[in-house]
Length: 470
Image 1: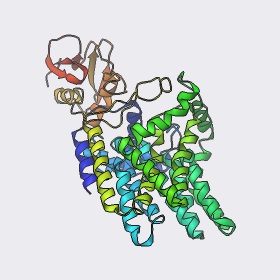
Image 2: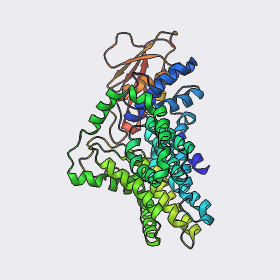
Image 3: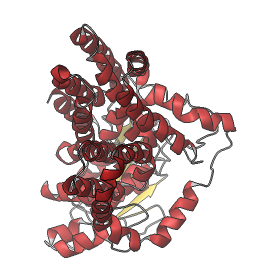
Image 4: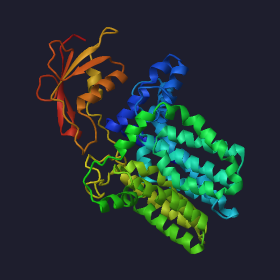
């Protein structure tokens, strides 16, 4: 509960315009709102499951976000009530990892192992950063952990029901994002092998459950997915092979886990090896290291892709700490240090360009950062908007629209954020940068006259002037 309160508190302070990728996912969710408002459930299901024109990504995250957004009355998606849906993925991962950790602990300390794993997941730095943004990798982190919990349950006592639940979890994971297959592959195969010959008889139920869940989307998207795979295997940097090999291990240590949890993971792995605890050790290795190995094969590399692998470190931590003589002291000590690192990264910002050079030549996406109170002047424009007749868009001209620098956010030009912001605030508007003979409002980043609006985040500002009576 404390984690939820603090996370929502961070979200409530952050008004930064969304990253380009993040805005794309919000835009995908927005496409569902008219159908939801019309109570057209058939259209919603069609778009989410097999509909055309919905892009190359599955629609699990977009449709979930849309439903939550609609329940809260639409409007600006950055409102804490709407944005809080993004926390669901990490809560799912924490609960699922905790349930898995129970199975690797002595019977008398199962509850303690579950608590340690749950707390460890909630302190993962990169996962917390993604959980504050509209990114499918946040939900994917929960989907992977939930699927592995279903796999572990199916392996320990195979049955038709457990096999079917595993299939549903696998299909749902793919509907969140295609990279689910890559990050779940190694530990899933280990769980299936652990079922033994008698367990393979139930795999038909798993296949049927997965096919029923994700089959319609896959069948209608074969062409798009071929293009998506080819683009994923197209390199976009000039890094050496050593840079590619070291990218995810280094990024995991610095951005993914942070120094405190990295140290805890290494100490935990060493203790598990020394104590001969093979199950927990290998489950974590296949989940974390196996996933990193698979992702390393992809030329395109981003830190967010490894987020679903990070709960494996919490699994090691939980399995090891319950085998120490003073588990409570170890949990309190490392928990406090890990929480301190997370708070530091969430309030002061950390350097992100520490990964091997040349792997990702674009602007680095900084998901774990301090909250930004500046909305780059968007709310001031909303306040200045003149009243317009229903069905008649207000004409807005932007002069000298600035680019958003990497230091602020990896994003579009300023004017490209303005139209959706106005629309979601209840103003129908036409925003253009070309000269307009009859604009109702002018946003001038070059010179006055008009009301000055300072934008410190860009070391600049603009003037607003209206040309019609409000």
